[in-house]
Image (cartoon, rainbow, N blue to C red):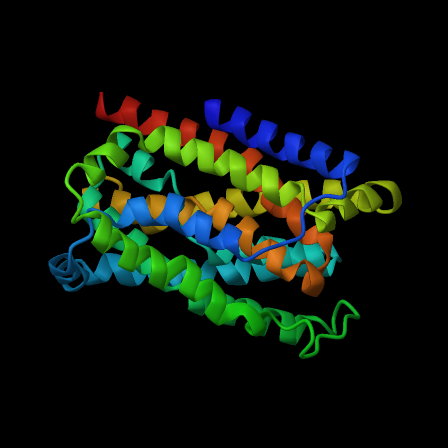
Length: 314
């Protein structure tokens, strides 16, 4: 519940700041900040020898990969086309393409899942950001005509793919190796990881919702308020379908499959929101709406599901 409050306050404070000032101008430095505060700490416990787990649990990995990069994108595609809006469709697809998230290890540990495999899955999903961006580009290429949008080189998603990969994959991984060499640094991050994580989420949301481009949400509310309802329905439908698919696919008596289950149920919302700011010019400001509603659905859903794990284990 505390995270829900932080998300709401960060978004609201940022939006109000942008409303009463000239707002922020987007800078790629926010991606670097997200990479160093949200992604880098999750890589401290990753060891190269853990890659062997990929082969040992290859069937679990394959199921997770198929769900996250085939099944869920197809579900998002269907929901997006039904929404009737290019931005809402892009936002739902964004949810489908970014697996895991900053809280996923918490839910895995709380549910009795395999944390070693969970960390490896988190690392693999970070590496797959480039694949996710490619799929988002293909989605925009083949659906823009359906929505009556011209998708050309001036707004294409792939124009910033390398920058995102560098700031969210390469630099955080290299930085994590250096930080581990500093005595006490990893222990400090572990001790204050909740404060660091929640504080960075607040700062990121404050910045993103304080952007000049985020103020266009007011125009959406004034001229197309139905998109708020369409986004809410689309997100609830997406998470409901995701839960059903994940619950059917994984054996929740296995710690390894529990880890893969959570990497399917939860989406990397803060990362999706960061990347959405890159693509506002491509999909429109309505792309932000599904990601915003994602916070309101995913966190309560995760709490309810984790409590069921606790009840079953008790």
